[in-house]
Image (tube, rainbow over all chains, first blue to last red; front, side, top):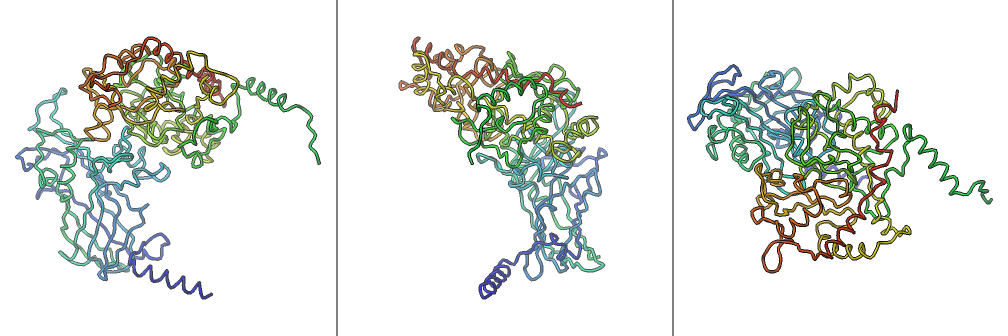
Length: 268
Length: 354
């Protein structure tokens, strides 16, 4: 009996030291909701796929025909410093410009006040190496992740943007198309490029998100695709119209790490 | 109480063997189809997570030989992996896909896959269950999408029932398609060559030439092609001069410039059946390969140090006698029973369940 009490005390102590909670798995701790809303922008213009032109830092004009990226491994910080980590299995989302519903990610979280949100752009290396039985739904290479998975070099594509730019010399087909397929999780047997990026947004810059009965605060995140072309290094579409599995992809990833910003927190 | 034996064991075994041969078309799965040969290490593939069953093996075999996995129903896995050629693409230098499209690499033989930890010439895939995705979705191989394949299989009159038998569900998923294919593929065990029988002391011995050749092999080849798989699964450049397409090999996956022009070391098993050789099938005979090692190695593709002679010139040179005996030894790695095993036979693979 004594040992049980000691053990329980030790566990409690461990739990409180750790100050981490995982909601949702038993349903009890996920009593409220909160929405992450991703809004794709090119500078101050919203991204459209109707041929609208934007200009990057290199002065190149381009339009977008496809834009999608994985958001995963979401965690939230409470005002008391507690970190709430969403159950990983239900923490993978593919934000597609072509699918408005995919840009609204509603999370089930414990009731509370939240001061920061952290997420990953991409798919963690561990999940990239899991058996297919643990990659269903949005992670199924034949389902949600179709077109976001490299079969020949097993791994997910994290960020995919395609479009046209008059800056590109004509290709064989006479089109001026650019294709950015950025992935790479660091390698399975030997290390390679790692383009996974973690992003933290400080909600206090706007206001604390308050969840609770009858409430659903919306954290509005702006994704500025122009940032993909600048920051650590200017990316010229004319010089690099196709970037996929290459060392150069690192520059794009270093840039896109800073394309997210907090637009507003709407406490609804 | 002492057990009474009505028949000698060998007789029972003989009857069983005869019965199984009779039933070659309608065989029943037996555990010994995927066993660790006595001269092999433990397999790498985790078959506990995907235990081979009779229904799973048959389903995997049917899928392996079914062109339903390609965009226009013309190419199956078995199109480029032919049993008579030890599951390589008999005589083809480059793989040949839908619409007569050619790939850039040679379709390698399939054998002992459960003992491998990396697949493809560049090792871009490290799990057998993920491997078939590459040829299915490669536009110059089977040229399909995975979602289309899953849709076609679900709409097929036979497959949902076969998945039900194999996995207890008729909902066909990526996971289960790959598991079925793996169940068939891990059973492609080639361990019955003369070499294997000698090593297992099954009453067979090497000739004098083979014995001498075995020593030549051990001194010159075994560091990259170690027994019993005859590959160390590492990436090496054999100093092949770059052809027009300039395949950078492992570099395309690892992005490590020191691995430019390296490819996974292929096994030396079943060479009789798996020609042509090298990642692009440029050599049709073993002599051409040995000639390349002797005098053809190019510095431009940074050959592995094992190909550099003490005087700094590249090459592995054998005397005529060494070459003769080495070739005699290599012949002992051919497994005729493997290429003729009715268990893997394409004939009847689509017919086994009505």
